[in-house]
Length: 95
Image 1 (cartoon, helix red, strand yellow):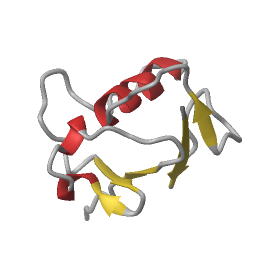
Image 2 (tube, rainbow, N blue to C red):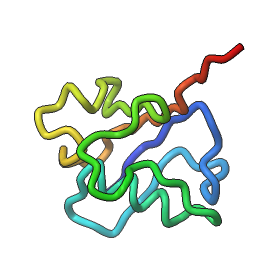
Image 3 (cartoon, helix red, strand yellow):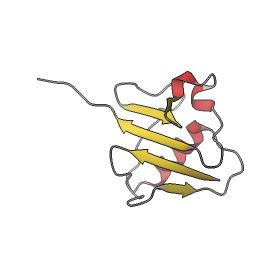
Image 4 (cartoon, rainbow, N blue to C red):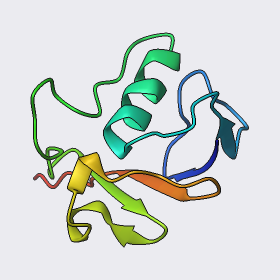
């Protein structure tokens, strides 16, 4: 399965890659984010263990330009070959 990736940061361990070819016939968004996490030299926790949603103050994630929260299955939404997952670090305010 090929999943296209877009982001506002460079994925550690995936520099200069625009897609991932994963040897899996089915894959949920949660599993995809966990796979990305394991590929990084220093693990990035996109999904906290047992969480039903991502921490909105940390990550914004879309599937094919639609926020994952709009899919009825949320993190358990199955990705299809050729889908695009966009991951953005949320901007932090401060002063």
